[in-house]
Image (cartoon, rainbow, N blue to C red):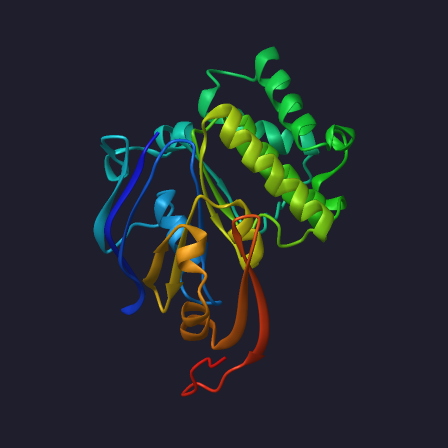
Length: 263
């Protein structure tokens, strides 16, 4: 399913957060959104999911403007994974994953819903946690459960906000490899907010680099992750090598705000 974003702008209490954001995401693509803290990455994902409404611009799923869709309709197509998820009442891990089946349920959960929830847990390698309380497992395990919930939702577009933020390096790679395999096998489309530039460079088809709520670079990883772009957006001098056709970023030192990266 194609996701099309046209001239999206968003402000909190008249303070601009996103300005003139436009892009398209085709079926079977991974698009990474990168940029410093506070540059609007999470806000953009929340706009895409319809959780907040842009002040200007439009967002289309195929030919349908999400402004004309209710939450249930959006949830059948878009799966959103936030950075963290707190629950007031204790829930078993399986019940948390079953929340992803709600857009498809008629009256109550069916055997098929249970099977799809277990299948999602198995994909994430955490089926042994099914009967554990969600609030009693580690932050990294919670992140995997929320991704499993999005998989059980059977959405065609996944929106992932820092899905590896609480994971060690092995599990970061494990989750990103799984996402890449799912995109290939299930023709999903993924928009992922990432802090780790090397993860974005390794696993993305395209990258959107944001700075102060605006797009400063967009394209394939090699064209976006340049020393000039990294210096301008992150104020860091970096070396960018090419490894197996992908950029590999080595940060060297912070720059003064009026300093340019020089070799």
